[in-house]
Length: 219
Image (cartoon, rainbow, N blue to C red):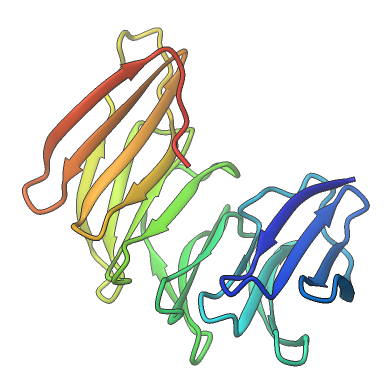
């Protein structure tokens, strides 16, 4: 049974993960199976694998490592240490962000060397990370925290922290989804019995829009 599917940006490939612990790479045009990789967890999440935007790399969490393959040959390029999920590439393909119990790291796709991000957001396997369209900043959030942290990619430094206040001391707050527009406006959603969507201006750090709903996810 397939539980995760990830397309490459150009639509050439699709990677599927199943409860058998395998990840399969398919050619979309010919509908043929190109490669099968094993040794993956059975409960594979949708953020556990990623293609780079230009289609050169495919990265996936396997055990306590992140494995990167070259999509032109499907040979393994490198194995990065540390359990990490979720994964995401920057829009310009220069950085792979990985987040696990061992920490949040930014990997240069030229040298595959890490830059540690000292995030205060507690790790959660259903956490979320998103780059802005210019690959300058990375936003980090978790269902275990009410905070959204925004980091400069090239420094790296914390440039902003936004918080969802709890409706009461009995109400748990967590961030389920994030999005950043080209105009550097941060969109976040929160699930805690009742949902909310907030928009912040990254230049002024001011809250622009608040929408409260019964339940909501933003993808």
